[in-house]
Amino acid sequence: MKKYISLFSLLLAVSFSNTVLAQDYEQKEEDHTHNFSIPESTIYNTKNWVNTNVLNQQKVELWNMLDSGYVIIHEYFMIDCRPCITAGKGLEKVVASLKAKYPGKIKYYQTVYENESTEKMAKKWVKENKFNPDALFINGADEVAFYGGMGMPTIVVVGDGRRHKGFYKKQGYTPLENGKIIKAVRHAVEVSKSKFEAE
Image (cartoon, rainbow, N blue to C red):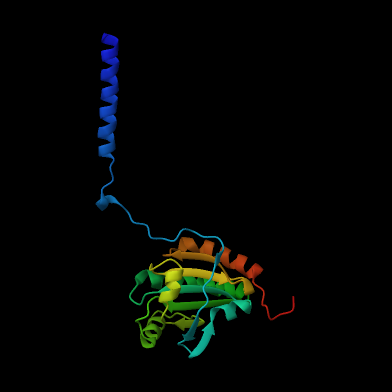
């Protein structure tokens, strides 16, 4: 009988200690880190859009650019966003090296993520930060929503000719992403053929 009481006491003690440990390791909300980044993706479908390039007032249609065989590195940004500036400066270097490697194949776009900033505000942001995008757009809310919601900067790489595919998308930027972006662009260039050229 003493054996059973001892065994019961031991099981009760283990159960109690597990409960105490579970309480000790319960995560409090103030200690919780929210991660809003889009999971790293492989190939995904793109959303077509038509927008005005505020640098020259010409209309640009995404799928028409992809049909022409271009690979586009696209940064969605917020005007007063320090990480967006950091991303823009990092991307400019990446874009320059990729344009040298793949002449006539790469485009670099920047778009204000919301539908409130004016052309003047967007142009001022580009000029102050000495950016040189191939096109600058405002009113990017629908596109940003398609790519997973508001998180600035949001960077995408799209191409694949008439198939209109994306190869990279991520909210946020660090220089560690450059290798992934370059890899995505290289893959996109390999498969992106203009539908207007003879096969």
